[in-house]
Length: 177
Image (cartoon, rainbow, N blue to C red; front, side, top):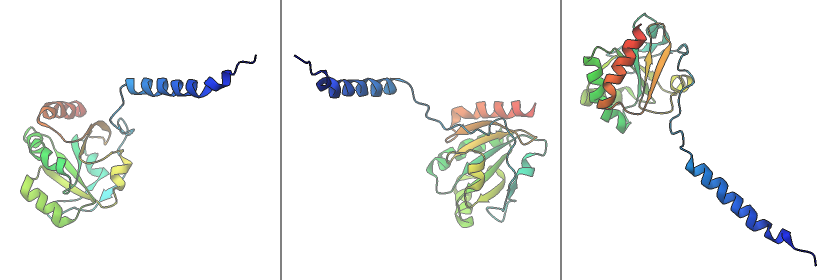
């Protein structure tokens, strides 16, 4: 009598599928999209001012010999509101912060700054998110440490919280050396 082993194939395929899915769920996932630009020079760009009261931002502004925090943000971003006090704390700690406003209107940027404070020395308007994408930013808010030569040395994904302030000041100090 010929055994019908092939009748067991669907069950074996199902068991194999369950083992594959289970092993995939057991491994921790990488939840952050880290920029490939960390350790590389900032790409060349020149952004017009986001508001008339402050100058715009260009890559040359990040190559003046002084390290800076470059904050990618938007007036319509709720986590950006939450991080505003921490950006003020970073500024009070000696950090120079430049901003890139993503897909924003000047009046909305001005209203945001009036309501939440303005830690920025410059704000460039990235109307098409071109600079954001070039530097490998995965969303807003996001903050990059850029050394005085225009090299991205660190990327902080998400809003800056109070516990991140000392670490970012330390990263900024390291970028100065």
